Figure 1: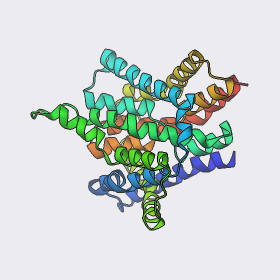
Figure 2: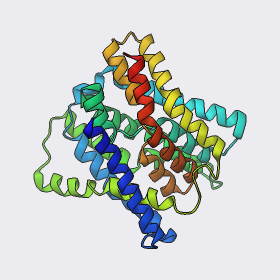
Figure 3: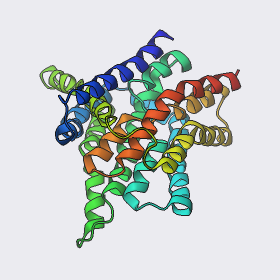
Figure 4: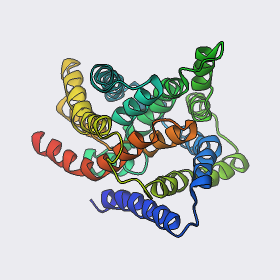
Amino acid sequence: MLDILTGFAIIFVVIGAGYLLAQFKVIQAQNRLMLNQIAFWAATPSLIFSSVAVSDTSAFLSPVVLVIAVSSLATMAAYALLSALFFRRGVPETMSGAAAASYYNSVNIGLPIATYVIGDPVYVVPALVLQMAVLTPIIITGLNFGGETKGATLKAVVSGVTAPVVLAAVAGFVVSAAHWTVPEPVMAPLKILGGASIPLILMSFGASLKGDRVLQQDPVPTLVASALKLAGMPAIAWAAGTAMGLSAELLYAAVILAALPTAQNVYNYAATYRVGQTVARDTIFITTFLSLPAMLVIAWLFG
């Protein structure tokens, strides 16, 4: 339990540092997004590759990973449908909300949750690769969609599948599957650079809280994304896992992972492409505070 609280403490303290630095104008509005750019193009790809390259690829065949994939895509589709019916945003804005509703924090909260609530961290890295290699190209394609120039759609698709975090996840998976060992003079610098990823994203997120209050803008899309993340995605995971005949233990693992809060990477993508930042930011804020009570309810329901 201490490690779970530590995971949440890391998030809140670093976000608070970013907020205070913005208040004292150390981080200013015109340079805040530079933190996201550094994380997107260098630090996060380094973190992803150095983590995935040493993972156990046998865990990728777990039915838990399949349930997470189904529930993530279904939740994205549910948000897109609700957006089309009720609050009608463009494709990039809709994709930002859909990502916020389905893309969960698999690192600094997911790892301790998997270790101390589920009892096994084996599902975290496969789920991370799933997000980076499958969901991220879809998200980045959507965030880039809608340009008026010729070939804009193709450009959006290419940017999605060639994003640095996607290439890093695929490269790491290849290295792991082939049982290759990355030389330490290569891996050590990547680990140090990757260590900057989470602080950069969290501090930029904290700095973005200066000014507009949570839910001051786009409250309906934000509340829909938050409700889907905290309740809708776990419910879909439960339904999918039950239909697949998962054991109680595996079903519990899938539902708990589905209830994790929205990942800060969603805000990083939105900030990098400068679209849908408010919905992404506010959904992360709400789900980070409410995910622990949601998971306690799930634990109670599972006995």
